[in-house]
Image (cartoon, rainbow, N blue to C red):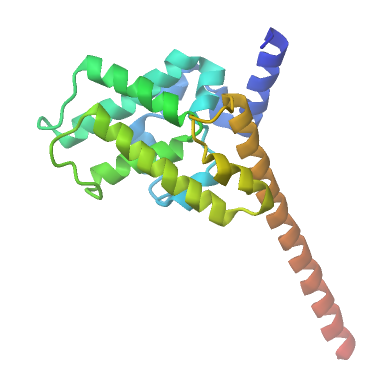
Length: 216
């Protein structure tokens, strides 16, 4: 990707998500795990996470760099370890490798998705018998991806058949940019459909009002 294309892609992502306009330091403050968990307490379902305006991991990578995006995932793992206490610890090497693996398979997920996975663990919705480790976290994200693909398919219509087919699975031949574009297009289509429904409802309400007034 040449420099102009890269700058254009960053600008598009920043316009779509104001959080990406923050500096490196500001982003880590504003989007810290504890802050996100509190701010997103009502975003407690996959369907709500899908339409969240929070940036995806690949958005973070595009604007701040891949190491930054992976480092951001490390913060979530560290926060989880602190929350669960001494019995659930991971070494720095384990956290580093786990964060890399999570990013590789889940770069298309947005931060609301990430928050749901970690919040489920914190709330005890997921049995952590046997302790916390990288394999367990990767497995939980794999389960979430499958759940998310099913919800996305149910929510969407014709164009989202592509999403169901690939399931946003990194094992497909799609590039990060292609996955991002598919997700963005499906989301824009859904927003357009909702806007059209609202417009038609307003027209219907206006016609009803006119009919009532004429009948008086």
